[in-house]
Image 1 (cartoon, rainbow, N blue to C red):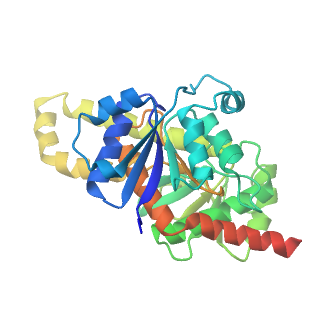
Image 2: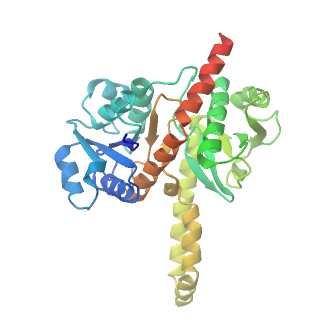
Length: 340
């Protein structure tokens, strides 16, 4: 019996497709014989890129698609009309059980809409959040939601917390993960209407380890394992972190190259800085899974390169091996039955 995990890869999505996407996929299958990559996209372009590399042929499948979905299209309209796009056909392969996961660097909106419409939400799940791992002083934390639900309600945030706790416990290996909600202060009475309504619900939630509010300045301290927020705030946090990291790296490099002393000092500290910056490189942790669906859907950055693609593939492997979808599905199906 073939025990390999098959991952559907949108070869045409993203700024660097198909080259960087295929490069990352080849790196992954050359490292792990238990992964099979099913590419969806223009077959001629895919085969041209694959010809650059050595890889085990039995770990690669290609399905030709004739359409692409661009970032400037309406996600709902594009999903409905472009039925032979790499994104739509790839998502349908997960829905049909032909592939175990789907990864795309393409249109975020199309991935979100397609994931919820084509793959579908688990029974009892009200909203599916995007949940990337973010680096902290003590390892990683899960930021949930970072872009899928800007109009979330308190009951949605409670479910985000529950799904995030399952992910951190079974994929990252954090026992009894600490859950906190993003707020403008630590006091329970602070926050906007959404936070004020959500706080007591999280406090009364018996199946999570809720530790209270967390302020923006403490997000990278590692004091919370699951950081809960609605998508607008979550996306701002994520983009600010990415921008700050790239700015700091650029300033440090410029400072080191500004004088002979700086250049000499830079050579001495380069190994240490490189290792430290690797810890705070978001691409090291793969993409953002869309939790709560009937199959695994992962969104990687639009400018994703080989490293992020490769790491997202291994992320899917861990996700599948731990049956996170099954654990989330069972948890919320049981809760739905209890309420019925």
